[in-house]
Length: 106
Image (tube, rainbow, N blue to C red; front, side, top):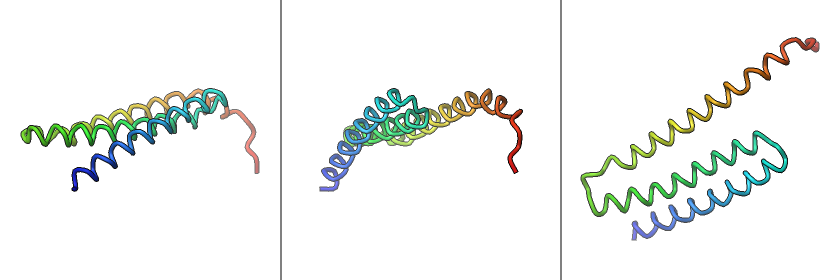
């Protein structure tokens, strides 16, 4: 019973987040919105996380010695989001330098 709930939630979460990511990527590219593209990436990571929970639960059911798979995938997802955030910050440095010479509004 618990396995059925876990599988249904994982599959539903994975499918919905991936579908949402595709829609956000399409809208972000049409509207040239960096924020929407970034949100699409975050939704894609959420979809991958949903499917990874399903994968790790299935692997654990067949081989209990791989108990660390879910945590390892979580760490990899966290490092991926961290790297993407660092890339976004590095990409923003030239924009901040351009706006430094504008007059300050009081």
